[in-house]
Length: 342
Length: 85
Image (cartoon, rainbow over all chains, first blue to last red):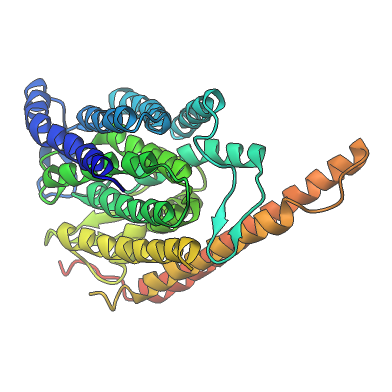
């Protein structure tokens, strides 16, 4: 890697984080002034937090990807941003109008369609093969791979969205999983000939935006991203995993979110908007601690499973969720090493 | 605190191993399965067989994860924490 490439990578990290740090406080002030706030439901009594910060997070990610696109003369960031933009618009519509439990995943399919649409115009942005740890590449299967790529967008975006319930949860989760993704793509780049550094660079804006947002979203939150932020994070993650050729490692990094979605969907039996769930998976006790619901129809979320080990404060609960994410990310890095190094 | 999470770390590890094993089976056995079909009947039959095998792989993941979760919840819910008041 040359000095120019290193400088460009540094810039693709620095630009989005600076955009977040400078613009977000003003944007949060604007949201508060307009009365666009949400109840922080896990505080007693609930406090008001500005929401959605998603538009500014999207602009920051866009700025970073523009740096990569121009600096590396690559179309990869364009495909990633287009997929993320569609998810962002769907999320913003959900923030403003509240979409149905089934409408949202269906609309998110458009993010996948837009992403593969760019690939249809500019071929070679991804390889239709999956590389397995130790076992190596599968044969190319363009149609099956493309269908899986389209479906990946709503699945991953919704999984990220479901990890957005507590102070700092989504920002920590996105930061850790995107770092695992960055590690995977970097190892892929280091051990593969002809691998474009633009694929590594495209990952950095997601790391930078989530790191910057963490400063505002950590306990006690001063900002919520809204569905526009969490769905955009998920769509970016899916696009980057595909263009980086690290699909298996990426799935493993987000296993806590996959399990959380699976538990929720299987226990409420289908796509149900969270505001319309029959009962809450957790509740706040008179001592301010979070307790698992003991109602039989309570959704079996990952949070409820964690709380079954003991009542926790919101801060400690998120810390436990971070531990689970760290373990998954370590599995993911091990998968990347087994795939590309050994 | 981290010791209490050990069963959930275990469930994560099982999910991780199953994802790797099942994706390998899908791409290396299910997708290239069978000879090149020469008639519409053969083509339809092969497609349906592949679909059934894919559903079976998905079902295995679901059954294992549901089973593990039920065991975990059953063990934990008996001693589920409740507010003292």
